[in-house]
Length: 230
Image 1 (tube, rainbow, N blue to C red):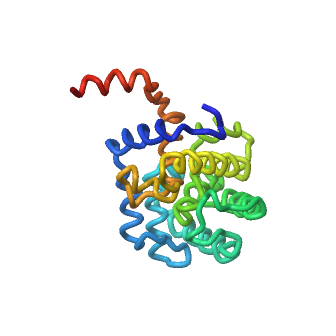
Image 2 (image 1 turned 90 degrees about the vertical axis):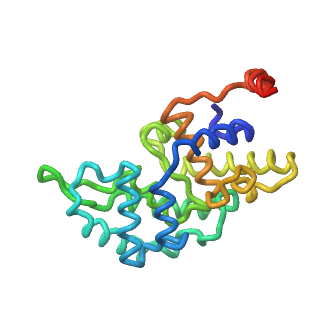
């Protein structure tokens, strides 16, 4: 898979298979925060933390670290909120300078101390930081896990590099959507998942094809299967 191109048809198929898996944690976060998780709100911070734990973050530290995580998240947000894109800004609309600022914001959050284990401090780390950014800016920022990160930018790659690649993917998808008569902003609706964002769909594609190593069938195989519907 080229890091800058995702076939629209394959993304649609992969995201369709993801629907069978479900994503209750993500749905609950949206429902309980009115679709706009705000780290400035104490209740929302706890919901974000709950979401992150369900998305396999902070498993190395105990539940009683939540208060510290919340405090660190609040302080980070107070300092960097102005550098984050507007909640309505889309991934494909990000400018290079914005992505540079987001990269700095990401690095700061990644280094924040979330808790301790065995007498040693444990930081948020790159996975929890990326998933936090997605949680609070789901229209603009794509999460990653360790395998997705290594696939696109290798172990030492930056979130800024990754975000640039995701933006390229979105811009390419936008052209494919236009070729089929609709805009990329309409893609979630076209796929029957209007409550999701394009960033969420791209993450689902990455997770299914990279983390879980699912390979969607090629067009010839699909056409053969479709013929069996008759």
